[in-house]
Each structure stands twice: as C-alpha cells, then as structure tokens.
Image 1 (cartoon, helix red, strand yellow):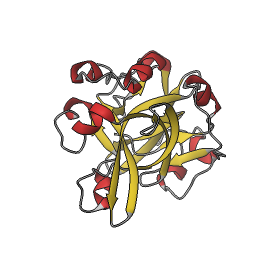
Image 2: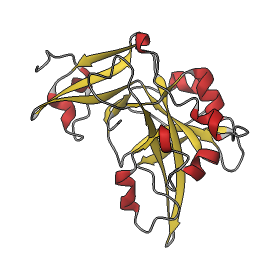
Image 3: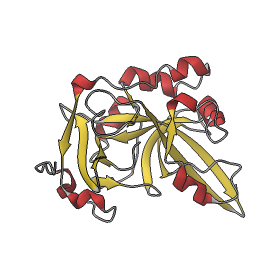
Length: 224
C-alpha cells in the first residue's frame, strides 16, 4: 500500500507537464491520508493539464458519508476496473500524484521498521491516481486515491504492495483524455524498475503524521 509520502518541490513537475501555478508550496516530508495533496489532471473546464489540490482518500460521487474516503486511500490495480468506487474514474478522471519518495513499514513481530523509498538518483516521480468530485448539501469535495500493484525486488521484503510509479511516457498516456481502453490503461499499472529505486531505513519520527520535517527522511540503523 502507500500511506505516507514526501514532496519537497514542484518546479520539476511544472516543467515536465507544462503547467503553471501560483501555489506557494512548502516542502512536505510526511504527507498523510485526508490531507490535501498535489496532483496533475486534465481540467474539467478546459481539458488542459492543471495542478490541483485534492483530499487524499477517494470519496465516490454516490457516497452518503465522506468518511468512506478513509478506506479508499489506495486502489488495487488488479481490480480497479471492477470496483464501483473506481471503475468510472478509470475511464475519465485519471490523475498523477506528485512525489519524490514514500514510506513503508516492515514488520517483525510487534516491531516495525520504517523505510524511505525513493529513486536512487533522487529525482521526483509520480504515482498513478484517480480522482472524484462529491457534492452534497452545498458542499463539494474533490478527492483522490493512489493505485497500488505488486512489489518489485527492492520493496518485496518490506511490503507485499507498492504504489504504481509511472515513467514520464507512461504518465503522458495515463493522462491522455482519449485513452479509454481499460486493457491498455491497466497495462501501465505495473511495478517500477527496481534497479532505479532504493529503500533506506529511517527513524520513528515518520510514525506520527503530526511530525512533518526533514528528520523523517534521515537514515537510521535498522532495528532488525
């Protein structure tokens, strides 16, 4: 799964996806579910790519209670076209979630070792995502989920799932409004190349979503 991640700056993404923003981004080192997260999507109004801030934890348009989003922070790639929460968004509301690393916890009995997983060359990247718009009683919430898949060799010893990381070319295809074939879209949702990623043990600071500072990504000796 993917339950925490980092995003330190936006400039590289603005150039890659040719979008502009007036958002004054502050570096984030411990982004958690229910918080606002930065994504690139196609504008509903213009069809052009735009940077948007969405609530992390997808709230389907048909939901009676927005708390359902707490259970939908991730979507499994294998069944994304079958689940009522995601199948409509797969066809027309795809996005990429901006990141430069994420956290996962390896369990050993009652102990958990957090790892910071990033690109070996520290370049930023994107997760495949979906978004939805929920409206009720004059309240509108736009929210998103991060898609997960089976782990690559770097992450397999830590957890049995990993977020779908898209290359620049795959992200372009994922965001293409004309791309509607479910089989082709699902073919993009595969484990990222392990040779380009590293997993670094970090300390317990990241365990609390209230702790959001560079301390979260400082390397530490493994607990076990």
